[in-house]
Image (spheres, rainbow, N blue to C red):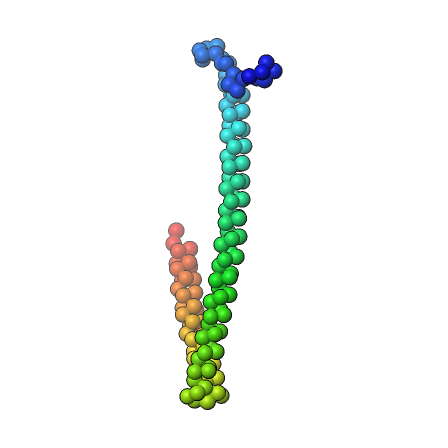
Length: 129
């Protein structure tokens, strides 16, 4: 250690009677400030890591959803082609559209029921003290 640098830990009197209350409070405030700065730096770095991870998860999740959509479109097209040899192209298209609309109506009905159930739960919980 060079002569110009202060020591990392200051020698303090070992006896509590030799220290003043003001010095103790100053030291406590300094330690609290140091702890707060360290905690803020730590949480800031954690937030940065979480943000980078969330960005990667969102990107890969979006790609997965797009690929699932393309797979469902290919399945729909294959259904139309498969039914076309049995029922003709127009009937195959009509059957496929009817099945997809029936699935959409069913999914919408289930979503509406779950929304109503959730709204009832939230209303019931809000009414209770």
